Length: 118
Image (cartoon, rainbow, N blue to C red):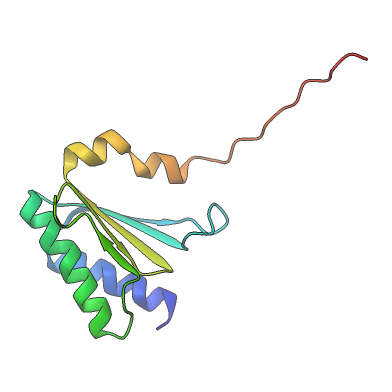
């Protein structure tokens, strides 16, 4: 499945499941883990679990088997790893605390090395 098609499938599924504050981040060039990170909020732990499980199911149904599904037992933060797209579904308080959007959209820091006197 094309990466953009998978990304759109995930966004459509999140929208259908009434996920809130869906944000798609293009992280190509910032990490080798994935190309897109998608963050969304659920309204309760049951909602977070249902959203993550549905994203995994719909992806598998479309021919893209998830590499992993984590956090559905607790339901505060669930992660669906679809290789080129990683989906984070969180409770709002957890999302506010970790603030992944800020982490992955911040410009890369450039380290300055002071000259050492010889």
